[in-house]
Image 1 (cartoon, rainbow, N blue to C red):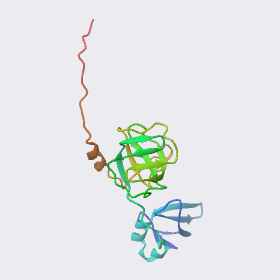
Image 2 (tube, rainbow, N blue to C red):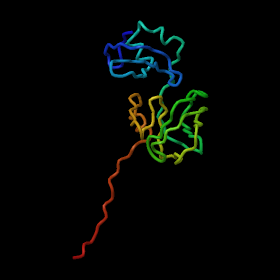
Image 3 (cartoon, rainbow, N blue to C red):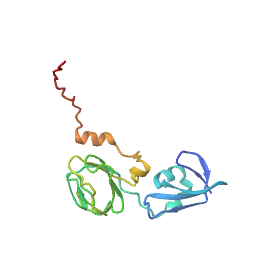
Image 4 (tube, rainbow, N blue to C red):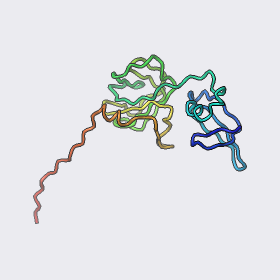
Length: 178
């Protein structure tokens, strides 16, 4: 089957299917003379490039918007951002990544959420605090292994929220003794 891929190139693929492990994505299987491999394609992008194949995504739901926020508090298996107003259980199964501050680099999976709190799948190694920023996104993987690219996250929005201040370091006068 011929598709237009994420880069706008025409390619032949072996199969296209929904992947329950990655809601909001289609799993596309490719095979060439050297190897066989899979790629995941956001459904909305796939449909823009391949409107004639919309039947492959029927019955799917659009994944929730990605979120950037600042931790208000946390406990062993939770993270709270009192500035949020989430729909209950909207982010279940989606990764949350501590992108800055205390606990930076940790990735956990949301098990449940209410209006302001995420309950996660395992304890924090280093609990996030009010210095911590987080991102909820299907695009978060293991940053230590794969690196992290979050094209849809608006970092400017988060920076404005925390009102990043740039300060000059204070220099101390030192008397030299010769």
